Image (cartoon, rainbow, N blue to C red):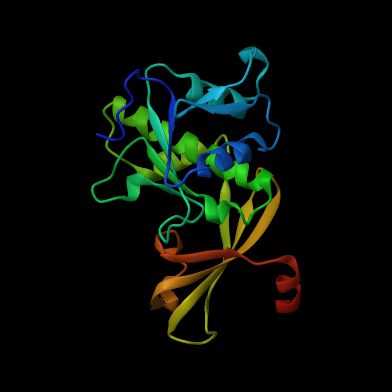
Amino acid sequence: MRFIDPDGLEIAVKCQVDGGCQETVDDLNKRKDAQFQTELKDGKLKVVGEVDEKKLSKSEKALYQAITSTDTVAILEVVSSSDTAHFGYSALNNIPPVAGLNKVDQGDLNQLDQVVAGEFVAHEIMEAFGSKLGSKQGLPPNFQLSHAFANTFFGNVRVEQIGGLPEGAQMATTARATLNFQRLQTKVPIEITLTTPQPAQSLRNRFDQLQGNIRVIKPEEKKDQD
């Protein structure tokens, strides 16, 4: 019941802590090549000012239409910390799956450059919107389809160089990888301290399902490792 939108509009934003939603909106407004700004009003994401939709790029037009839709409701839930969200998370991965609901971990996003954080937020919005569209069309919940839909506009992230620590151990307590943001032409090395040790050989096949505390490896640390 807490996710019902009484007037049937656009992207609802739910906050776990006060102030978290505004940080997320600020990140969104720093996304690359932004052609309009947004604000939070009455718990919903709104477009600021008048926008000529015909002049928007493909990505910006898709985001604009998701925010201004009057017949498809999607929800972005903002939390301060989550072991299940690697910056963002789709509720299509829940059991049972939930369409139209994505989560962002603002604590994770705060570790990133705001342009990269904005890319994550825009991707999660489009993923939630895409999954809700599919649900309305009678399609069964499918994370891969919704993820691919969002990737055509924002994100297009490839996970590379997946490995576990300690080196050579059968069970990994830490996982490392590089997130390659192909649209941004930016790479971000990350490390996840796993909630439960995992077989090192399994990390490559189930990286998105790993649970734990995530951190961004700073440039000076990466240099030392190299």
